[in-house]
Length: 250
Image (tube, rainbow, N blue to C red; front, side):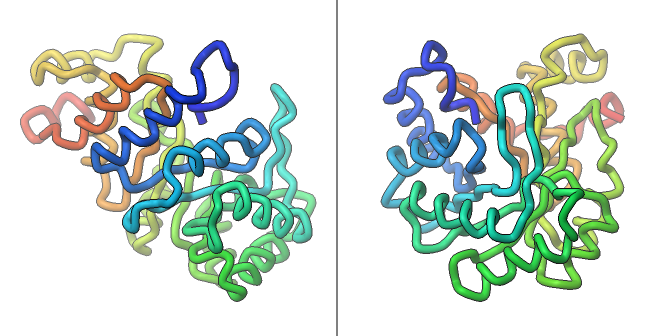
């Protein structure tokens, strides 16, 4: 999400080079959405990575529009189909590896929204279906219509409101994709994080990412960045062993 947007923040070639560097570092999962800069984020990933390496998974989302400061769910079946087709075009794909319902639209029956994605799946345009910002009951309702491959809820070291959803995903073998996995941690000190970071000689952000990975085998954090240095630090967090510091991170 942070690779596009304000042109003063990041030039196009730098953004493309960061995405390519991620692949060089072994990153195989990229998360985007049709509402990130009106599709420009999807186009940037295609510019940077197409033709995609065989092991790279591109996940995108539909069902929410971004009107500046306002994000509005829009889950009408015809709109979801339209946006999936546009995502296919922008990403230069004949199928979407993972298509996620960005938000459940409370004005449209969930069965209609999931049914629209299931039709796209039946047509071969979508391989796997995911959900975002959902409850356990909503995941169960969706699973009655089609298998759910992933759930993307806000979750991080200091915000564990979706603990029950994570536990459910772990029991069901569903990937759990925490959005906003580290951002709140940069704003205030936390004794446990700071102590572990000092003990291991790493950053508190790296500890927060390592904690997520340590928390569950279905965890798939998606830290965004507009910095090559931070990208490399984020990836390095996967190698951090927290076994000597678990007591500080409860």
